[in-house]
Amino acid sequence: MSNSNDSLPSPDQFRSPSEWVLYVVGQLKQRLNIELDSAYVREGKEPKRTYFAYQVGDSGVLNQRGNDGRKLHEIELRFLVYVPLAVPNFDLEALDASTRIEREFVDEFLGIGNNAEETRLVSNQPRKFDPKMGVFLRTVVVQQRIYMGKVEEELMEFSGSELNVSKSDNEESV
Image (cartoon, rainbow, N blue to C red; front, side):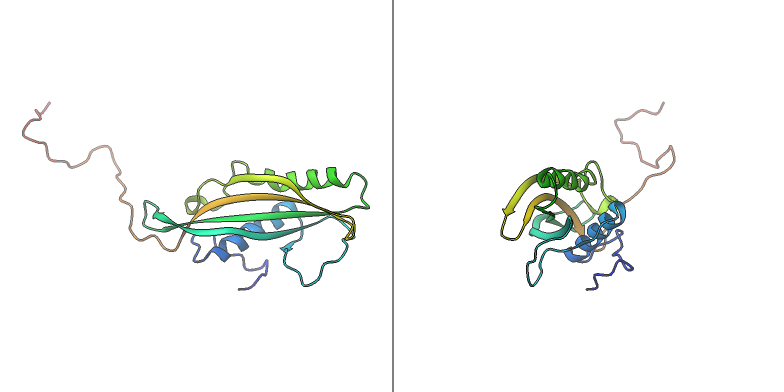
């Protein structure tokens, strides 16, 4: 699957958990004007500036479906904030940067609408202090339940003020 910003998955329907991840990452890149790449790199190196990365945490299919028949998945995303120890007050820099990410998820569905339940902020904690690598790491963890696939049943809508309902024998006409 492409990691290009040009072709973000559609929030109208997610066919796989990775489409949701790429959509959320793309939204954060645009909203915060940051670079946000996978945390999995081949070799670690001392950072020259504060940077952000993401990592997929726990993921699973829940044993339930939405009212529309779609399967419900719960996915955890971790957003990592790396700050060089050379930055004055590196721990406070990491706190401020991680809070920027955290605020994007408060009362927000990121344009996903009926394809997800409310995002849960799990934590925003320091994760690593590594003087050898010259880095301080803080992690924001969020979880969201998302609905996968096409809607299996059409929902019936009622319109108008009167419904054609037959009266039972016990009801009197007014």
